[in-house]
Length: 334
Image (tube, rainbow, N blue to C red; front, side, top):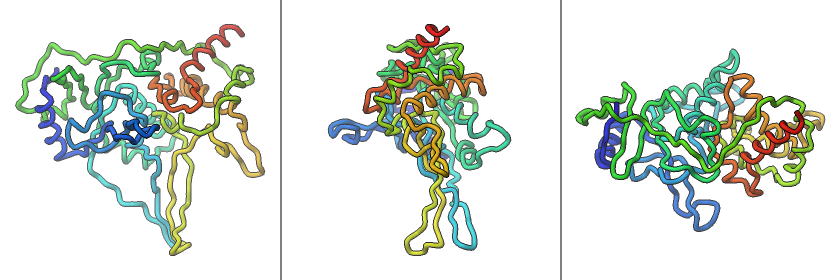
């Protein structure tokens, strides 16, 4: 069941939604990209449809809306601690199918990964709804079709932009915001069906691949900047920082901050030991986690094929080419 709205009509719906929700989606920031004359597409609050950037891939994903890059967990003094005030207003996040599938993977890690639930993630997740918009074309380095994340279900609404019209498929709780518009039963959601890049994720991976010289090439190329992790919609590693205030050194706050398995110091331990000192070892860890370890635990690959890690790597290291090359190594060794 769909609604076919003009852009002006959908703007009216957005104004209705704004009475109950904060609206967040990809926005374009002029001349804020990696070059002085390049734009940055990132997530931010939107006021109308004109703010929503659907003609381009965002450099960062929607995960920051429920897993912020820096999050204060509590404030402390020498006598007590307290949690920060929580903004209860609900939010709607506009995102693509690959990023919505990434949210499902975050849910597994933070909410269903053993006996403990991450309360900070759960609190933000519960107030967030997701409006997925279909891709009109495949962007550079995307391979979501290969990972099966080009399609999705369980969203709060789905949108297909069709020139001057928008086909909208709201879930039952959101249909009241479309009151007064005629429904159409003959239209179905449309997802992207083909990417320029195809990746065959190798089957039969095992720990035997850990010591293979295949990883050495990445030790020579990767500079350990961590940009791949920060742009990835499914990377969830974080570290803790205790910040002490200058005017009172007995007071401060503890923050959870995104971390990267590719940077120096990530696996350092007391006594000077480090699990992965070489960049090739760190690349192996990341790749195996994305296409092997996670799948063993949750029966799905962690990578959603958004290609952002390829987009941002200053050394032009391609994750998709790494996976394809790995398949050749596995086939040769077997």
